Image 1 (cartoon, rainbow, N blue to C red):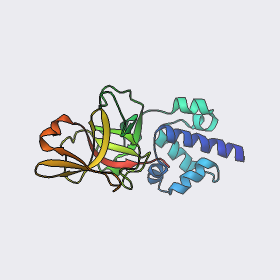
Image 2 (cartoon, rainbow, N blue to C red; image 1 turned 180 degrees about the vertical axis):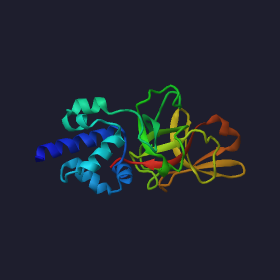
Image 3 (cartoon, rainbow, N blue to C red; image 1 turned 45 degrees about the horizontal axis):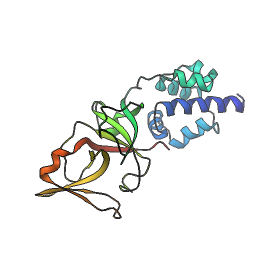
Image 4 (tube, one colour; image 1 turned 90 degrees about the horizontal axis):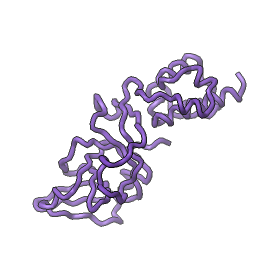
Length: 220
């Protein structure tokens, strides 16, 4: 097999993975190899074996012919939307927190994509109630870095002491760690440069709680 064909196939595998919003580590976990091996296959630096190739294509829900012969446009168009076994489809909204929004809720926002996330890594049986959005800024660094994607459980609306929540206040999204006190809740940034936000317990109902952050993803 020529180097051009190897690179072509590797590039198509990368396109499908990115279309499905999977990290190399997600795929490596399924394939039983390292993330660097997936990177080598995608870049054409290493030739993927036939058995591994068939297993990977089936995992992606793609066709062998499409991966081998497809152009960039056809591969992107034919990347199937159904989740591989053991993964859940999480709605992804291409917005940022903190970010000024009109309503401070997902209900009136356009769905951008779905992330296919490993349910075992999330320690969940399904992805119901989960949404994803992008963090902006460094107020929660190093726990959450600028550009990280946060996975939010929208069924958990009640602030839990010590956990990280996403909420909106004055039409702006925030990601903060919560600390409950008798008369107030403090919303704390991980980065000590940023001041805490204190809110009287009687005013908690004025917040729109999106949910609790259950994990953080990046797609390097």
